[in-house]
Image (cartoon, rainbow, N blue to C red; front, side, top):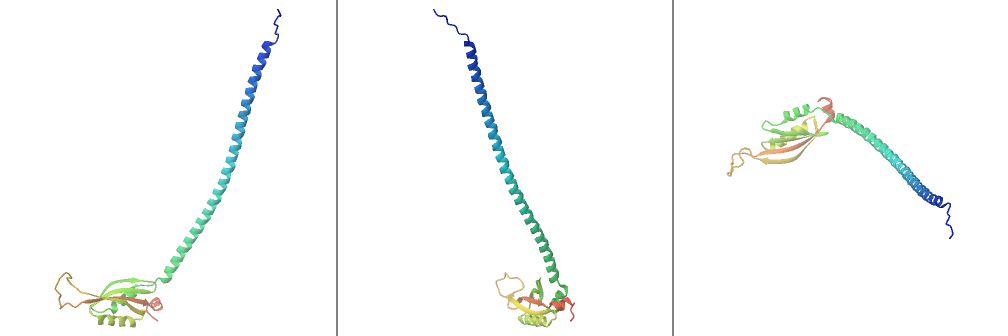
Length: 193
């Protein structure tokens, strides 16, 4: 019989177990380092991308701010231009209304009036067509108006319009729309030349 003498078997087993443990530990450490490196580069790329987006957003914000500043300046200028324009075209209306009322016929009625930049449009009711022509000639002779134009004449009847019988004693009345061009110089001087 040959004696089986193994003087280092326990040491060899221990070395292979410890080598395996160290190999697994080294692999886990390398994987952890690789994971952390990947996380670092991924975060670094995200930071670069976010910084580029931030720069674009700041540039866009500055452009919008400049546009808002321009719009505000234009609105202010537009408002000032509007006020200046209104000051230029403003004129006293009381002398014109007084002149229109003074020149109208006895049995005529001023329905409404509206003022434009350099004209007045009135709607009046008259008894006859000849009253309209007389009123137009009075207006043409007025120093307040440069031009007188009649735009529309219509006829209507006074009283109850639901009756089926015609009343031959009722005269139809005339309604006229007249545009008067204002003599701005005469009006600005207060009615004197």
